[in-house]
Length: 371
Ligand SMILES: *Cc1c(COP(=O)(O)O)cnc(C)c1O
Image 1 (cartoon, rainbow, N blue to C red):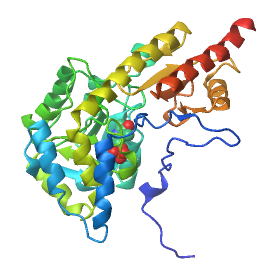
Image 2 (image 1 turned 90 degrees about the vertical axis):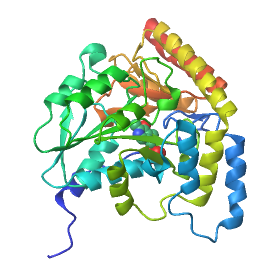
Image 3 (image 1 turned 90 degrees about the horizontal axis):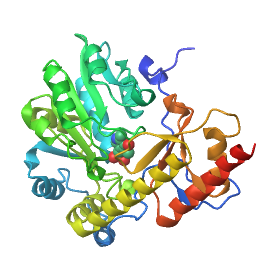
Image 4 (image 1 turned 180 degrees about the horizontal axis):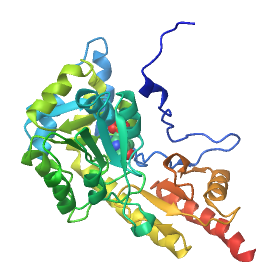
């Protein structure tokens, strides 16, 4: 029977599965599966959001002018080269739609953020997966592998820096080398969703690379560090031509008034940002050391989550660990969808969540020593 059919790429998409937030029969203590800010947003952001309740009958400013100006002030950028969106996922997707289509190739890394595969199929382009470096079982983007994957059909390279779910990053020099060796017709998209967490001296979010050529875009989000995931707010900085192209195809009201107001307040509350950063650094170091002491293998995460490999022994593997944590009300993220079934991704939570996490996993792994 004749019926409407989506284009072939659409049927290749495995729908994105978000971090779970409930466990049947158990009271959830902490959702450590979506890299949210466990301290919540700045109280000033919440106040700005509430104050926006008076204007809900009006359409938002379709250019998010005030937020782009605030971002421009904060990072010393030209607001005309900033675009805001309904989460950075929105902007990553707009980039795919504007610059690639059927017959084109999009490159991303083997364990790169899953959204890139989804976008590639949704625009009807062909995914090209660059294998990762051999250290730590291959859990860092390889600039050489990405460059070796470039063909005349390549339109976009998506790199999360640092990457989710591995937590690892490429130093500024490596990103610059990648950019230097890409054809100028290929758009390099640097997804810096976790940039605010990174303290490493050789890391940069990519602003200076955007300045250095017409083919680099950096995307950022308010969902992680700023604790505003529910409001769906992200932004990108890029060359004028790219920003103009995205402005042509975006939804005209892709940022709501309450989101914009909360975003500006969050950005300006630098004291609160310092608390978030300090909390994350303290607990990431502590959890990493504790898990390594339990003989788990961890990547060198620079983000607000850790990435841990469990033994292959049945009952002591990541599936067993996940089940054990759930019994205690903790939800971690399993990694089958990334073809890394031995690994769990665990977000940094509140103080008490982190103690519970370590107590729970200590008990879980002790059973193994006894066995
Ligand atoms: C969470 C995340 C995003 C941000 O998504 P939003 O749409 O802004 O909520 C983008 N990239 C990566 C790698 C992420 O982990």
